[in-house]
Image 1 (cartoon, rainbow, N blue to C red):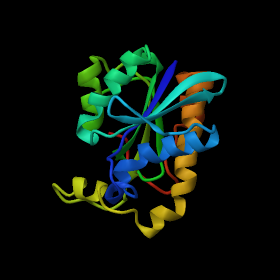
Image 2: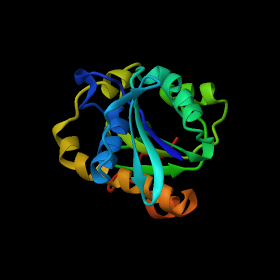
Image 3: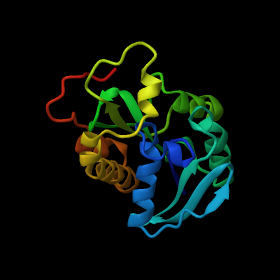
Image 4: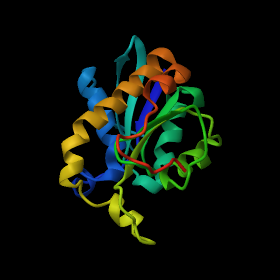
Length: 198
């Protein structure tokens, strides 16, 4: 059993914001594989089905971002998912918009939702798909949170479908082929950007 958890915030006001990319990727995976996200368990909206021949639970925690681990840990326990079989999908302000990084483990890098998952499950040794959301202009001190919760710009909307589709491809690749090969295939920098990964 694998668990793909996309991070975000519940509520319509947050739906079309950079901080909710994890939710959007889970929605794409659910649509591709005819998995109904209709059950509420462990404070998350979930659905179970098959992806690339493996049984997968898709989840969107409803605890708000900073308490994501409150949902992820009991979901892992209930479904007997080991950390290596958790795939966390989330936005990353340290990376430029449109870039994508698959990683086998690592720190939260300042992402409160990821940090809560690490704190709750007691390890950072789990795969993740990080989606770059930095807008390409300087964000003044304290404005990062405001940006993450603001609606997508027109330019972002133009590339959004392709971006979340690529992230869903990466999650499928991890499920089917493992993290190492997925890193080789999907880690990339958005065209025309110079922002380096933190």
